[in-house]
Length: 313
Image (cartoon, rainbow, N blue to C red):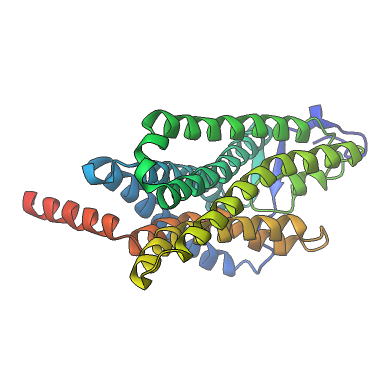
């Protein structure tokens, strides 16, 4: 970039992703850790999608949503992790301006879509437990498709707004993004623009995204808990709660990491990086494990698929 004191957005041709501030010898360890976790993400989420698509017993709304969740987790991590691994070996650690825009857009798209999809999954569990006799009527194929398409639409609109607002800022402080991927808050630290209106709009946009999804999840589970507690048998209550525990675990990890990252003061960027690892690496890795290990149908479908493969071999 040219003179940094007077340069603006139009003069920025690339950024530098600082990554983790650790000793150089630890970069190999971090690379191997990222590689291992990313391999587990690929194996787990691709495997989950294959199982859901090939087993007719899993042709239900819950697994339709779960298949989309695996797709989102797979691509959300793929937007971030490969570039981060390359930068462990790179001297320049640079990312082009267009690459940074693309990374922020896709990451925002998938993370917001996942929030809305988790709300749709909570509604699905609410109907399944509170109105089981009308489940097939309420959760029709058309409604499920509309909920998924609506989640992607909301994610796309939010991502367009967030990305366009971020990259209309003037960047004149530095090219070095103190993060391992392009995100809004680290980019704001590089700007010499007045951030008051930008921060207010971003905060309002976050509220519009987060509040409705959290309200749907909380209200759905309040009704679910109320209904389950009325079940007379302990075994019945246990079975009903088991169908929701996996979803609650995923919701807790995702929203916990998001709140932790965005509530962390700017003076602690390393804490934000650790929180970011939760939804770029940990959550995509754990989701297939949580749903497969705690789900009898998925385990049976996996065993059936493995038996079929062994027979062919």
